[in-house]
Each structure stands twice: as C-alpha cells, then as structure tokens.
Image (cartoon, rainbow, N blue to C red; front, side, top):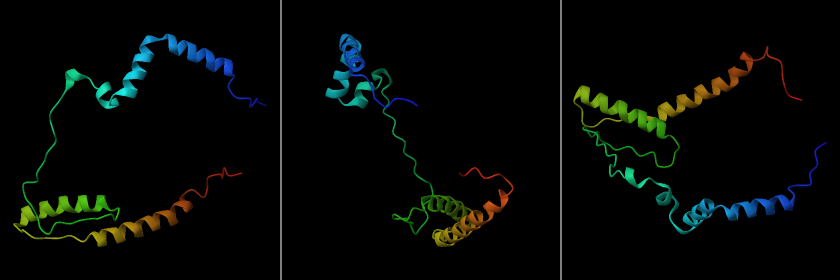
Length: 128
C-alpha cells in the first residue's frame, strides 16, 4: 500500500532554490503579477483592430427575446428560418412558436431516455 506521508519539505526547499536562481521565471512572475496578464502574454506584432460585426439584411418583426429560459438554440434556429421564410414570401412580420419546438424536444428527450435502456439490456452490467 502506498504511503500517505505527502511531499517531503526538503524537496520543496530544493524546488524553491532552483526557482529563485532562474532569472526567466522571476521575470515572468513579476510580469504576471504587476501587469495585465493578457496584455503581457499577447504578441504586440499581431495587434489586430478587426471587430466582427454582422447585420442581417432583412429585419423581421416582432423581435423575439428568450430572456433567461435556456432555449437559445431554439431561438437562434427559428430566427434563421424566420428570415428565410420572410424573404421568400415577402412578409415583414412573422413568428414561429418556440414553445411548440420546446415541447417536442422534451417529448423526444423523454422517449430517448425511456427507450435507451432497452437498447443496452443485452450488455453486461459493470456496477459493483
């Protein structure tokens, strides 16, 4: 059985002495503690001023807001479909039901969770 004595203090002292002798490590430590770490580590030769900005050419109303419902993937998907639908049909206002998609997502999740154990019932159990 392995010993649980921990790390020997003599080893830690040896590590500290080696660390304090290494000039590069001391400079790096000072840089990281006295400056903004991201600016300290960034390459100054690769300073880019590009900011991603994409505006959708067609705005469809009403604007949908997920608030904090945790369904951002539904809103994002339906907004893409909504814009394509409005362009194709020359409609300015159109809304798809997020609640409908959310309901069927929950039903399919439930069916998957109830059916999947039967798929693996022939496999041996590894629980103790």
